[in-house]
Length: 136
Image (cartoon, rainbow, N blue to C red; front, side, top):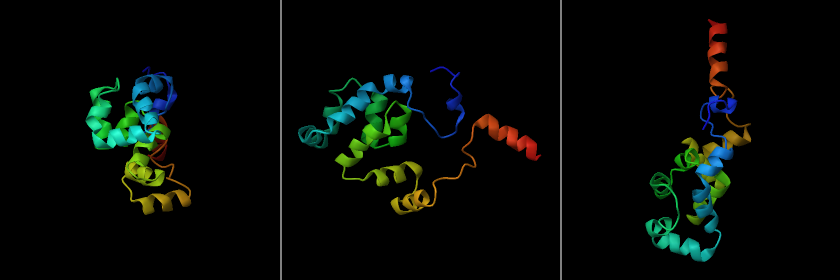
């Protein structure tokens, strides 16, 4: 990935761009396979064997096994595809998102109902350091 992308400077944010799409192609295809009940059954019966049928990196496979959705995103996963893993496990999108933020489902829902997370600490890193200098 090139560092000339201005959105790489937003802390805690991974933008699903063309580079991410290429990195996560097989991971996302695996996720889409879970739309078929036979594939969900095979996956749940032996996760490792099913994952080994896909040309994913070992790190991607381990992130799926660990249900580490944040790591999956960092490795090219798209949240809308990754939600298929959560659904296979019987979890709602809200439960998955809550787990990704370290919040309970209820706390996550309440935060979103109240307008989402604060902009503070979520600006461009170079903008944060500029604002800090202005305050000093």
